[in-house]
Image (tube, rainbow, N blue to C red):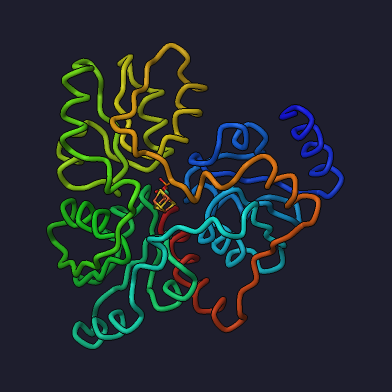
Length: 303
Ligand code: 13P
Ligand code: SF4
């Protein structure tokens, strides 16, 4: 059955000249049929370089929106219209405007996990792979980091020369990875190195050996001589970790490492999206113009 769907997908994407991009958190079967799999920065940047006119995005809404914002002329189709990241909505436009009044020289730094409306109010976007580097390059001392508080506090810790204002957004998947579960897992696997996404809590970060984006976690494990790893992020990452490192062992630390929105995307939804070329990402022209600027600035500063 899966094989049949996979064959149909392979045929249709050739016929319709579609490139399939997928995030590491989607189902293994979807990662398998994607043309490219990566972290959110890689996928946003790659979307600007692919030759196909249609991008089929296997990820949550903000990822498809970013691909569309950076490629006005292309069609971006979502594998699932309802796969949305709750954190992407966790910043109030009224608060952003208020902070701008309070701190006239503030830079509003927007984690890419955010809606186009929130990006449109921001000065620059960042992802977990480049946030520290980009904020460090900004001339502003005052930084309002939205929407993720955990990532914001992690960046602030690396850059004590800056003054940070935080927002109370969070990722429910990473927040539920508890420090006590990690401590117990470390007792069980004393030789394992701990790889952690910076959306986790400060208590979990404090117990970690490496902190980085999904791609950076995979690269670290692949380059390491160590054979065992505890992994503090969404469980979709285990597919690529195991593919790249057949001789190494990767353990989750809790039963909660699952993003229900990413897991909405199944082989069947990919096939349906290819057959119908729907749903497409559409954004208001005025909104797009404003939301594109911080994303383009991120690409520039990340070089
Ligand atoms: P990455 O940028 O590391 O891929 O993370 C995206 C994300 O949604 C984390 O929860
Ligand atoms: Fe959003 Fe968290 Fe899912 Fe990432 S893991 S897409 S931040 S809900």
